Length: 340
Image (cartoon, rainbow, N blue to C red; front, side, top):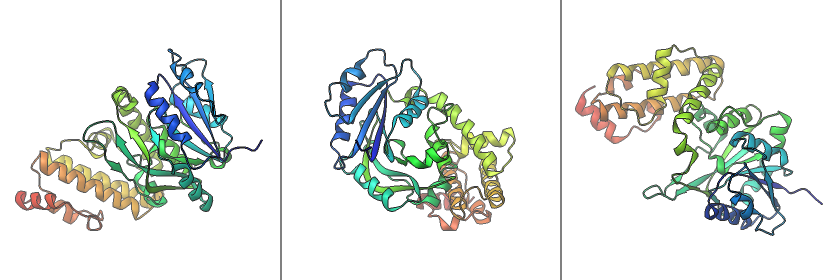
């Protein structure tokens, strides 16, 4: 029997029957049919996952049970080991994919052998006022530049070329729960290109039982640990006070900047990132410098709203390429009023 072209990888744990059935049904409704759907139940105590999965008679649906709870990273690693397909499509147990998703990604990867992982745009649903479309940068250089700051590939949307991870012994880093996807992309980017399709092909369910909601503090600690690895990759050395600025102000979009000295430190550290990258060439230029400029403008806007701090003179003197970035009209207005 021929191996399937695609292995859809779905890790499940205590999933609501409604969510799990919707996820499975969305896979079975694909216009692309040459796939296997591998579902690993991470030792759900109520055995509801097993009941739901085994109610399907489609031979492409295959159920596996962890003898004990292993966590998301180890479970996803097991899914990779079980897979037979040329391409691995990651799927979350409470999300949906649209009918053309697998076909679109297979077509793209077949015609772009240099690309190791392909994501898509997605729509959020499930909570009022958050039913919006999210699109990340599309091309490899922009994605890699952004990955220093945040994850810009939606993990439940990605399709991975299995040969890349097999040839280079790449897998999920088991010390991470939430940041394991970002770390995986960084590892793959060392050997193959990254790409996001602009089409909305995935639906991301928002609900109170999400890991990002239940384990917010642990996720925050993980992100700080991953940043230490990224500082080493970039070749930048920061003291504790500077690391606090990075964690609490630069990387934290909802930070409330009320001190002009903090804003000046943010600009100085972002310039240090660019200077280090000029030497290490860890991230693509000029894309990396432009992302740093975007972050500076965002934090200037934050400071104008929360601290009534003007930033016109700072933006004029900075070496970051802020002129290549669209400055919000409200920030321009605030800077005129504040005369900073």
